Image 1: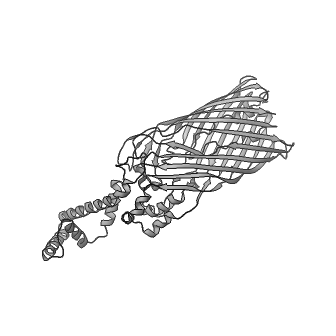
Image 2: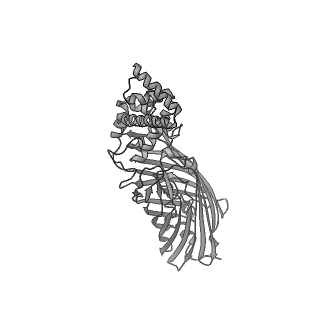
Image 3: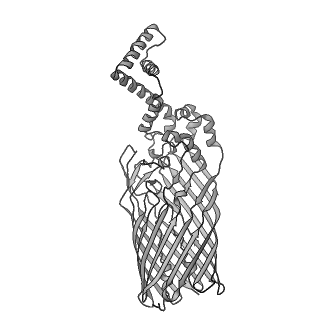
Amino acid sequence: MKLKTLTTAILFATLPATSIFAAALDRSGQSMSAFLQPDNYFEAGLSVLDPTVEGREAGTSETRRNIEDMGEDYYFPSAALKLQLTDNISFGLLYDQPFGADAKYHGSNVFVSNPGADTVLSNASVTNLANATLKPLSAEQRVGLALKSQGVDLTSAQGQAIYQQTLTAYNGSPEAKKKIDDGVLAGIEKTVKGTLAPIDAGLGKGVTQVEVDTQNLSMIFGFQPIKNINLYGGAAYQTIKGKVSLRGQAYSLYNGYDASIKETGGVGWLAGASYQIPEIALKASITYRSEIDHDVSAVETLSAESALDSNPAVLTALKITEEDYKKIKAPGKTKITTPQSVNLDLQTGIMENTVAFANIRWVNWKDFSIQPHKFGEISKLVGPLVKQDKGFNLVEYSDDQWSVNAGVGRKLNDKWAGTASVGWDSGAGDPVSTLGPTEGYWNVGLGVQFNPTPATFIAGGVKYFWLGDAKAQTGAQAGGSEYVAEFTDNNAIAYGLKLGYKF
């Protein structure tokens, strides 16, 4: 069927708010639709997201308080220019903000500092550490420690007599053994807490929050060997900047960690191909975008560091040698690699003035991680305490992201057209990072386009998201099943506006 005056291929390829809330740090969806428009074309758009992300302490958290909405509103612009230089050569510039994060915790929970109550180790962690200290001790050592704590002088004859009598009871009576072991364990716990008191007093103040922003400018050349085929490729220049603050009991020694990443640029590439028959609104395209490496300068501070500097006994209690601690002080670089991705876009006319469309997107989040230099060096020192002998990352994901958005659009008259769509996102694994605690989504969307002239349009859209339930874990817990909070029954609303011009 032949579609008429209004080029519906433009309408259904430029609907705003298509991928505004996706897995991990994915934001814009990195659409190529503007570059695949016929002739010369320009567009500019703005998308806004209003999420509600609430939860409750769970898992290894020692309390079960509610967590207020930590999802911050955000917006990002986009723009595109496509020029048909000759019958066979096209050129385009695409600007978007492909990745980002914006979150801030509030209220009273394990992600908000509580000076005077927060401790570098939870009660459970202190007990685990004390048990690890107690386990290798012999019966003689345990009895000796128990009697010393009672003030018995083991160098005297009387003290030796008491020692031998107690040791015999320890080896011969399960009840006596348990009583002595419990007493020694309590003494070790008390010593550990006393040793860590200076660092507990210097933990951070404030709330956990994160902000990550990227900008991407793609320069693309296309070659059309025949009318229906477009082969294209080009370079992408991308910048990234961000800041993160970790606060609260959930982050242990990192309660008081801050990192600020100065804006840094990197270069990648993209390539793709499309096939289209405009007369029936048939279009199919596939686009690959490469990873982009960023060697960033991260300014990192840790409020507990001053206590570690002035109290060597704290290092000993945490089983950190002074030589290893010097590595934290040494300068180092941080590398961030934004992920590779593939977009598959499909569209076809299904009846007069009506088209169906779909977008399938894959993003390689499984291989993505962020480990600022100082954060990483500290993680290697304290990692054995949480069964992470090689350290851990600030952020990582366990799965790749898959997303599908599909729908139909219809031309109502020469001025107006509308769309309806549904979407699904797999998420990037569960448990997830405490800095973005949702696991995929389902959504529904509506869009409308107004054409004041045959060459111009104004498009608007709205989407409602049902965000997937997720368990949130700190970096120290990543890769395992432990978690510190659960986030359920959350949602988001996205709005988009786009202006377009054909010339």
